[in-house]
Length: 538
Image (cartoon, rainbow, N blue to C red; front, side, top):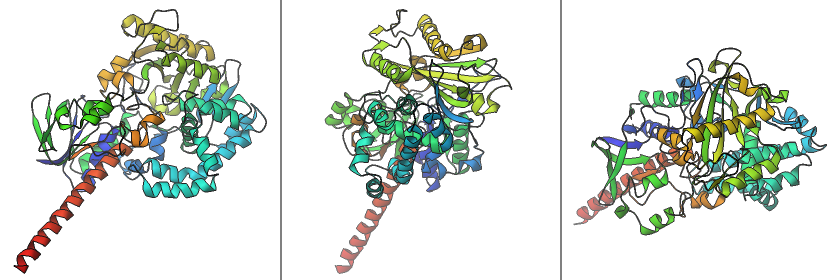
């Protein structure tokens, strides 16, 4: 019998398994797909000569994560690659906002939009440097991060106290208006906020946009050399060397509960896999509660709260093999690993409003990745491995365009929406379509079929909005990985601190399991000592 079973070999599940193995536990990871990685995988399905990331691609949170740093994955062969520039946001009038890891380059670019904006960006960076250690500490430790918050509060006072706290909860549109006279800085903040499902008018989108921008400024948006699956391979190698096992093609259909405690799992093939100490679930909260764990084992209030659980936006993705680099009208965009495509902050607002109304956007905001620009090993010299993703409603009530898209995402709708994304690229890179050697379309149902955690194409395990963060994630409670079932821990992006490839939910769950076992062992020892003392007194 193994000490722990981990359900799901995504990055959080693999991080959790590694930490348990480091503590001397025997660990078995069961993955439904035929290969590990969850949303961190690549293949050569677009063109045999091109490495294409299936889901996630750029990893600023991984670069900043103390959880991943402590695993020393470079010893397992992991290498990171950077594009010359982190991010570009071209406009149709020929201007282009650029984020560089070189602070002076970023400031000079924004200064060209409006005098004083370069200095304003530097001031935001100074605040980041004051708060960075405290923010990262609070972000990557279990909730509530009491000590981390205490240290962050001291740093926050130095950065302006309540005024800075106000800045962090501002909508990103308002933050941009307060900090910058020109459009460049506003574009960088707002585009980065929409890496999550935060509209420019959403409370807290300013803080998230600032966080992602500062991560890019400090760490860049790096990629694993060779493909995103290199990160997964490093985690699996490390786990295997420590005695852990990963079994793919093993879908878990039930968490077995006896006497209020999780004691094992059952697979689709009917196999019972017992666990001596703990079960850690790298699955979404709705998949765990009421599906893997029968409702009779769960509090009624939790099941009621889950009815209010909100997913983040659905995702629509296109991969391309290009015969040459993208012909951007703005030369600066050619050096960026990530390119944001929307015509200004108003375009971002219009896009988010259409999704809120259940309409497929007619001019979708696209995040465009230039993977060969970032990592030359991804495709032959002189070509480009590229992708873009945009968001669509989970429940489509209409098409903001003229194509009658219904959200069925049949073959016609997939091709039509892919053409719509390509039109956005073509606006800023005339001639782009003529470079396409091959393309692949991944609609929301396809993404979910390839990774069940990507429900309807949602990539963050639930909305990033404030009402489902911290003590509200995944439902109102403590924000911790423990569940109402003893020995069962939520280790996915549905848990604090949420989406992104950084390993924190998995690490938090593993540490909670280890603490609980240590506490139980100490309590058992104390009970035996007390019993011995009582026996001696007799």
